[in-house]
Length: 320
Image (cartoon, rainbow, N blue to C red; front, side, top):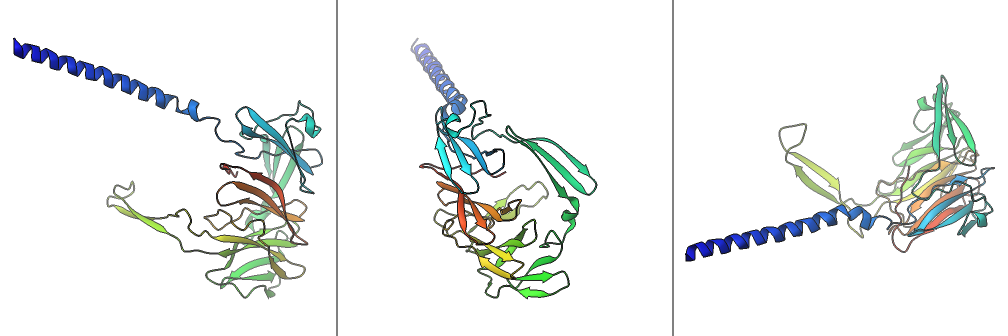
């Protein structure tokens, strides 16, 4: 009789444990399934989606600043003046304007067409429709060559040379070194009067080595090496360098507004204005709490901030 009682007791304990374990699992499943609901809407000021106004001299955008809260920002691209308000009406714009949040995209491709010697792109947003064309012949130009084909920028022994179409060479620099070279890419203005290259201060790279035990393309294990930066490690410092064809001179742009950028690739996304009077690049300060779009005047080399965003937490930068 006693062994039977002990057996029933053990069975009861096991069943009780299974019930408790099932309840624990149900709670874990519920927690996992609610992850998106519990974490969504926690990141604000995560991107800038500009919507250009007629005349293409100013734009506005809407940015999320908190749960169910946003602000409207208007930027004068010529003067750099920034206006922040709570509604479109305060910007002097009708409330019916398409007011996408920072997580949405205002520009949508309408159609593209390729006609022999050029490709035409048409883009439409809520305020204007624009068409631009790009000659396909530019795609076949030599590396570093100007759009008009009259000049080529070359790099020799970490320095910069400007070569004319008839082969005349102008040595623009002599202070480039292996640790601080001048390098590509070469970004030409559309009028072929100026271009931008980079001056980079390289740093020692930390690396981590791992063994891939079962690579998909071979039977034997494979040794892999990755860059592995730790918090506080030095990062490459990148300076845009402006080259003037008319003067055959080069100027390193002062870095007062971009001293501590977060860049692992030692590169800048240089983009010229359609008028060729200034170029732009993004600056994400180390720590991810300050973001700027900077403009550099091609004549004076003066740097100005076109867009600036600050955050007490973090800014998520999405470049497209």
